[in-house]
Image 1 (cartoon, rainbow, N blue to C red):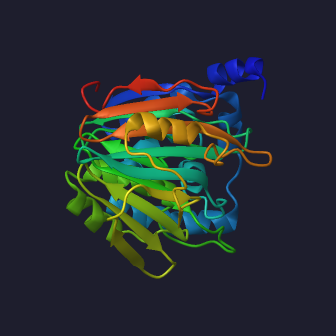
Image 2 (image 1 turned 90 degrees about the horizontal axis):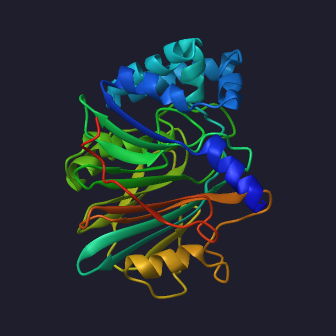
Length: 313
């Protein structure tokens, strides 16, 4: 992509959404950042098979995090589309495997997480959500191409979670979409124990992996379609490529070295691929309550500080 295209894309696709109140209000607020391409996509008639699976899936998801139903209702009414269209959008059972790099390290006893995420250039929603709801805990994360979820979130109490889809489903599969789970964990958990219990109470619709962390500890969990395998991360740095464990290849333990690692093409850390691009990067120092974010690839975009969740509702 050229620099001119990057500037245009920043104006069209990257929005910062600050929203407080109840989740219905938050859903209405989110629609302010939707582009015409999003409106067009959401206005399509739901496919019968996908709708049937979406109805089963969202019913289970709303049991885990009931406030999301109000939020999706707010989105549907905010742009005057059928509620069923939003349910299908929030339950994309055929999502492709993630293209990402996630690193977890420790510095002076504090967990620091870094993450690059890649998608097709045509991905039209890249909004950064700073949500301060009055019916759950404040959170910060990137909306992504689907609504009601984020591929990673940090909560006001310092619970961090991220998700990666490991395999594309071959057929409609009921369950909670993997990209909704990090936000559910951040918005409903005051500590990592509560987050892990909440994670185990969900049934993901995708074969997927998760990192769940707080300032002092981190866990790696894999859903194989039947059960969760959860392990505590003991050796740092811990690196995932596309959701699977891999060698770090280099040493890093603080925010600056993580930023350099995420920006480096020599190690393949900046996760450009064929017809794909790194569309954003996060670095989060949990104990220090510091979040840095790039709107675009970290190899050509500057990390900027983002306020910790809370206090803007």
